[in-house]
Image 1 (cartoon, rainbow, N blue to C red):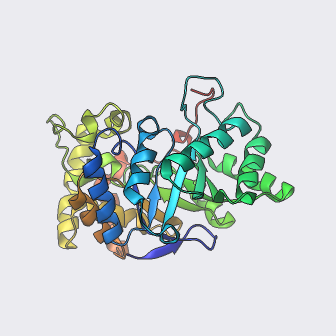
Image 2: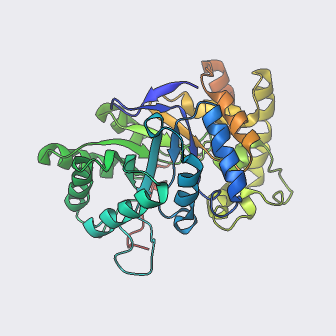
Length: 332
């Protein structure tokens, strides 16, 4: 496993991190989830990403139990806040009340005194940005949060937050967690250039495009039983990529991966890691062997010829529109 700085901060993270969106607490039984976490640790992964909302808070509980007994200082534990965790009007968003209460809940569930990175899971149009950033800064000063970041924010939103932090003397954002893959490159036009300038690193999710880039989804055929496409929690993200043209082109990536001695999943993860603004790529798993397969992408270098072949194969099915990065106009 190789390690990278999280943005321009001093924090080192494993360039492949383990995430438990959808899997822990819902799609995967706890014993299997613990086996996946153990495989991640055995393979050198030290960075673990979750969120309060995953599996209705159960994902944090499962991860907390799975990491129990592991030396805390050897881990980087990331979680997030924004989406609803209850029925009340204040059980969502990025208000001082919800951020503070949500963090305390996350710390209890994760069985830790602090998180290494606390992330705003979307942009909240209903809370003054100054309130959100001041609350994050207070939690840093209390020692409950070491670094702060965001997820799926636009370049304009990230830039505005950095400007406020600089003017007010708050801790700056060090990271953004966007969706990013060979098929979904919406951060490249605006978010990445700003982030490179400002020292913000990307912790990317869905580098395998929800499994599409493994090649297991075949054109003209229904999704495999038990796959991400059949799970209600994840099917919304993957459905837009289950197009026959997309799937046909993805199949043509197989020979490129084979020539490099890589699986298609390894090629997909290695591809996102070629972007120097990417600090870590999040992989999920329902079986330990998936973790072991994905980590083989660490340290892989793809030359310009390979990158061009990939671009030529995928061509017009790649999504590049930065306007595709959106947050709800009203809190859900």
